Amino acid sequence: MQILQELNDDGVKLEDCLVISPLFGRVRKLTLRFTSYDINTLCNYDPPRTEGNQWFFPSINQEKNSISLKLHPEFKSYFLESKNFFKINGTWTQRALLKRGDCLQLSGNRIQFWGKDSNENENQPLLNPGKKLNVLLEGETGTGKTSLAHKIHEQSQVKGKWVHLNLAAYSQGLIESELFGHLKGAFTGAVRDKVGAIEHAKEGTLFLDEIDSLSLETQTKLLTYLDAGEFRRVGSPQAIKVRPRFIFASGKPLRYLVEEGKMRSDFYYRISSGMKITLKSLRKEPEKILQFLERFEKRYQVRMSKNLKDFYLKYPWYGNYRQLEGHLEKKREFFSRPHWEFDWVDEHLLDLPETPLREIPKKLGEIEYEHVERTFQKLNRNERSTCEVLSISKYRLRRILGRVS
Image (cartoon, rainbow, N blue to C red; front, side):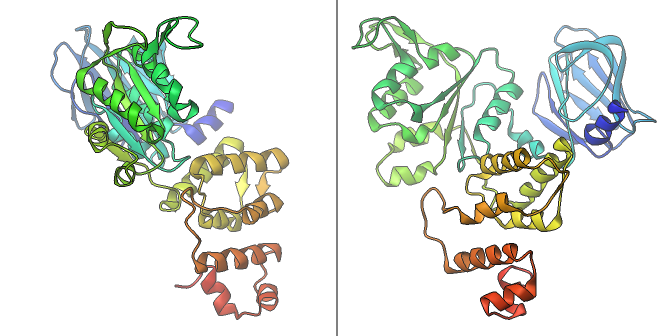
């Protein structure tokens, strides 16, 4: 029964999608439209191809293999079956029921299964920009830059390590040492040799978070390395040649920093010359809020009322996913009941001095909406009582709350 319940919630079903990261060729996203598929590996190096429900992939070890992907008649979810062993989520097996998020590894090819409404699918076509192409991620705090960067590293199948360095966590005097390393005695406090993040990443991925916090001096040194491909540890005359793949992230649009003189234009053009991805805030994509809420409901077996979801959809969430998830977790800690309504935990959101990071003053309409919404919620969403307290008409109340256009 437990397996059946899990497959009802998370099993891979018809119309779900999958992302193929082949041994050779570009990443592809497909939708499952047949009840059965044949997945074949061939003894060649041709790009992968699909012919209806027949899939063909190159083989890294020049061995032929065939796996059946079928819709289970009882569970109504897909399962994999083969005479030979295959690897699913890192484990060897000959048969496996599939759940969303599972990853099939087959002769150097990767097939990852997702739900048709899954938020993870949004960026999947962008997750494999080659193994060496640098990537710049821009987006407000909490939009998922770190998660996306790690997915890019995984989908690219680079040989080396994943190294994450948050540049804002160090003083400007220490950043050079953190990036390039140093020799013992190079400066006060350097009691031993240190390997920097660039050297530590080697042929892997170096994720430089908060790249907008770098000083102009450090930008110059990092730019010199990016152009030449070699660097020296602090206090060392010996040049080191290492070429990791870089993923840069910024919470601010970097071109504005160039205009303000806080970032070198040549440094900006260098780090943005690869692939640039801008992650939108939840305020601009409320449908993602709804998707997140639905996944949260399934994960923790709770049900949110329509009024509560409507409130979450209208709330600005300047902290984006990080703020939304943190709020839901706090609400879950205080209440164990399966049905959620608007309560004092949510009311606290209206009392917070929420402003964007750049501290742009709120518009008059936003202030009016927040005051009316707060009153409406405190009066248990009673329109008549709210109109009496605020001395406004029912039509104006509905207009402010967005019920009429």
